[in-house]
Amino acid sequence: MRVLQNYVGGQWIDSTSRNLRQSFNPANHEELLCKTQDSNPGDAATAIQAAENAFARWARTPMPKRAALLQDFLSHFKSREEEFVRAITRENGKTLRESRTEYLAALKEADFQVGQGRRVAGELRPSELPGVSCYLQREPLGVVTLITPWNFPLNVACRKLIPALIAGNTCVLKPSELTPMSAALLYESLHAAGLPPGVVNLVFGVGSVIGDTLVTHPAVKALSFTGSTEVGLGIAKKLAGRETKIQLELGGKNPLVVLADADITKAVEAAIIGGYSCSGQWCTSTSRVIVETAIYDTFLRALTERAKAIVVGDGTEEKVQMGPVCGKRQYETILDFIAIGRKEGARLVIGGEALTEGQYAKGWFIEPTIFADVSPGLVIAKEEIFGPVLVVLRADDLSDAIRLANDTRYGLASSIYTRDLAKAQKFIAESEVGLCHVNMHTAYKEPQLEFGGVKESGRGDPEAGDSGIEFFTRHKTVYLREQS
Ligand code: NAD
Image 1: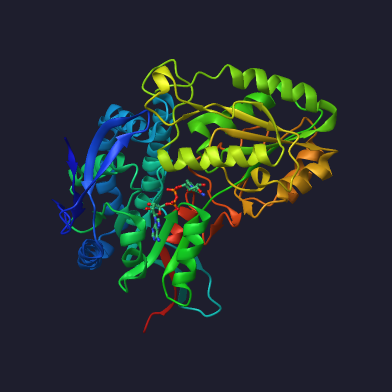
Image 2 (image 1 turned 60 degrees about the vertical axis):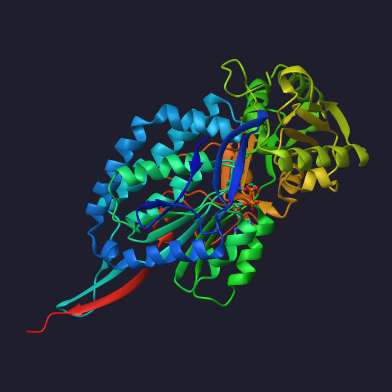
């Protein structure tokens, strides 16, 4: 049985707690995948200290040299694609195809950020005075803590780590308790690249046990957190009044609007991809489908037929299109939401049950589920379910659809299907989100663009794109006159 160790100061080490946690396969919860360190606050402090010791030298290393070391990391990362893909599927439950998509997305984003290492230094501005140079210099922050969720264990870790390192910070990563294997593999690639000891550190453990130290330790100058709105905003409160810079990427309740003039087949496909990929556990998953009355019945029929055809099973099997959900807590939460939806009187069109017989007996499997005719005040129309559950609402027209789409505390991603450019532009202007799509599913993204939400879906600079490095730097304004 593989025991995953923490990575601190360039060494693989055990937690001083001497305790281990077990990780199981969500497709077969009797299959023990690995054991990991059950770290304590002291382990977290040791990792922060290692990062602090390494900071001055790493910050002085020229940015293109840091980028060259990370190129070596990328070479190693590329040579282990199959291991990453299998690890993600086994610990998270998503299908091999989805895991490969995640791996390739992580690679593309990392590649883009490493490329930034030759262009993002500062900005030159003209001066009013002769002989004076004015410029803005970006400087690293120091030790940064990176806390990641289980739903994109590799992509989210890379999205934070690579720009933080390129910018000259030293890092401590705490991955989710549920997905330690991809984090360990990632650190093997970082180790193989020969980064100086202490530049990257990894601490396994439970958020409620080591989280406080990781976010409030005085040496930590920034926190980049991706996870639930409840935990993220709780941390923000704790850090209020402190110098620590924060970036929070949180939950969503993402709407897909389908207008009467839309290509229904394509809109249905977008709802299926957005709603059921990764068993609905994308932060940008489609959760609400808002359909104009004129095509409501036709759309719902087509969506239901398509959802019925989804093949559910163990993600390691090629034919499977939707895997289990990631663990017991997720499973119970999603089934609770389904029970609430039923109790609230929403019309259950398909699904709504756990799959528990035969091949499903040992896994956390839930049927693709659709609730229709949902009124906007219901809990299932408001809360992030984070599972394979689509909630369908009826809209009178575009304005009504926008009103419904914005009727949420979240503001991560949205999409509209229409052939009418003017309507699409009205939607873009009025949709209260960080990521807006037209005739594309809610989760589409590219690495050169920023990624983040508004309202209770995010705080601070977004991730990725130019903002990726921006968050991990502070600006210094310089006025320089040469002495004659
Ligand atoms: P979570 O909030 O339960 O946990 C996220 C991370 O925080 C984990 O590593 C956990 O151990 C840690 N944590 C828990 N309590 C902590 C504490 N008190 N202090 C410090 N760290 C603590 O979220 P999750 O269930 O792992 O992930 C699912 C959530 O993440 C969903 O809400 C999803 O929408 C969101 N998410 C958002 C984005 C985005 O970019 N907006 C991307 C992926 C996931």
